[in-house]
Amino acid sequence: MQVTQISDQQLIALYLDGDERSFEELLNRHKQKIYTSIYLFVKDQALAEDIFQEVFIKIIDTLRKGKYNHEGKFVQWAMRISYNMCVDYFRRTKRRPKVAPTETFDIFDVLQVSDDNAEQRIIKSQTHDKIRHLVDQLPPEQREVVILRHYADMSFKEIAKLTRVSINTALGRMRYALINIRKMIEEREVILQ
Image (cartoon, rainbow, N blue to C red):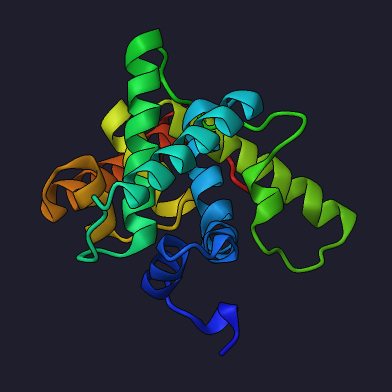
C-alpha cells in the first residue's frame, strides 16, 4: 500500500512506531490548508511561518506524549491548535487579524482559477480587493467565520468546534456577516464587477 493511500490515523500510528516519512506525508497533506488559515489571521508571511512551525512542534510533542485521541479528524485538531496559537498571538500583541494581500502572498493565487484574459484578471483582482476590504470592516467574530469558511474551507461544524460556539452561533455570525457586507455594498455603492 502506498503512503498516499493510508489514512491520517494510520500515518500517526506509523510515525509513533518510528517511521518519520509518515509524519512528512501527514504534514504534506495538510500544510497548505493549515498555513493558509494561519496566514489569513496574521497577515505576515514570516509570522505565519513561525506559528506554522510552532503548530507542528506542538503536534509532534502531543503525539509523542500519547495525548492525541482519535475521536476527531487530524486536520480539525491541527486547525484548532493553529487557531488557538493565532488567538494567543493576538492576545499578546492586541492586534486584529485582517484579510489583505501582500506582495509575496495572495490567497487567490492558491485558489484554482480558470484561464481568463487580461481584462477579466484585472476585474477579478479588483473584485477580490474590494471583498477583502469589506471583510476587514466586519466585527471580529463575523470576520473570523468568513475567513474560516471561505479561506480555510472549513465546515460550520468545524468552525463551531474550533471557536467553541454552537453551530447556530457560527451560522448566525456568517448570516450577519453577509448582511453587513451587502449593507456596506449598498451604502458605499460598491460595484463588484
